[in-house]
Length: 128
Image (cartoon, rainbow, N blue to C red; front, side, top):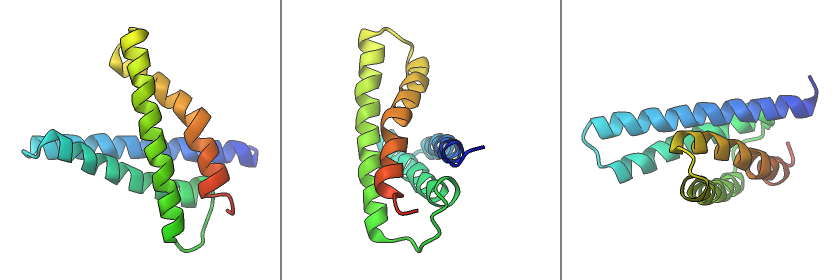
C-alpha cells in the first residue's frame, strides 16, 4: 500500500470513527433529557476531537506535540466541512430529492474527497 493510500485510509477511518462518536454522544445526551441543539453541538465537538487525534497520529503520523495553531487550523477546516455538508445536503435533498440518509452518505464522500482530506493534508498536517 502506498503512503498516499495509507493516509486516505487512515483519514477515512478517522472520519467514520468520529461520525460514530458524534451520533452516539448525540443519542445518549438527547435520551438523557438534554436539548437537541446542545447535544448536537457536544456530539459534533466530541467527534471533531477524535477526528483530529486520529488524523494527526494515524492518518498523517504527526507525532509532534499538539499546538494551538494546528488545532485552530483543524477547527477552520471542520467549520468549512460543516458548511459544505449543509449546502450539499440542502441541494441533494431539496433539489435532488434524495432521502436524507442517502444524501448524508453521498455528500460526506464528496466533501471528504474534495475538501476535508485535501485541505487537512496540505494545510493542517502539511509538515507531518
